[in-house]
Image (cartoon, rainbow, N blue to C red; front, side):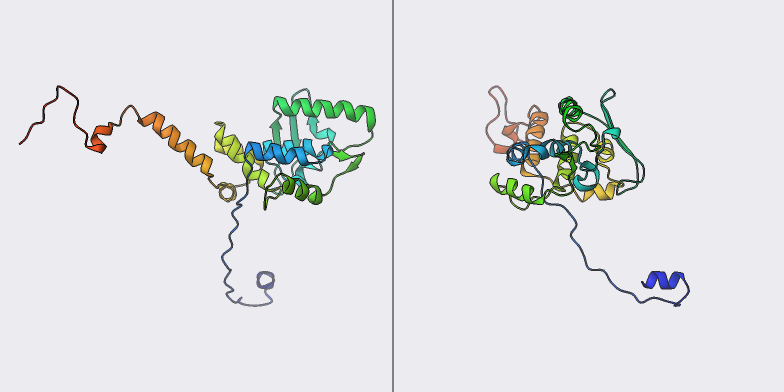
Length: 228
């Protein structure tokens, strides 16, 4: 309000209003077995949309549920979001994995048979899906998962892509993060990540380290201690 008034020269100065610190970091993410457990509890009509969100990190309500068949090209295995319809206002193009290509191909055949006039890729009996919170909470509860939200797929997808060796800048682009700082809000390391880091360090460093230097055990036979 003050900024607008200052811009229109209604006021000459605006008061300083400090902002409270806000913790915007997401704390939820899905390991593979957790996702599969939750997926099995969801209604069948919701499963493909969540498989897509889990792999690519697109926003469920604004980018996944509104997908139309005109945005899918099964020949090139691509899915596109037009400029202006995403939160960042940028367009996006991704290539489907083999798993999702099979899902979309099966969905297309089903679309031609049962609902050829429906423009939506993910739907329920030909009607667009707008929300899924009741089904979501029930599936998470039955899978024993607490405080999970669909938005957790965004950071899960980025982490999985980086884990698999995809450059972080590409993972960010696939998920649709506009800047690196936005992506950093989703970057939370799990215990599994830390364990994997230790394993990798061990495999790299084990030929170099000599436990004798640490434990103080005697040198190998044939070596002579020299005193100065």
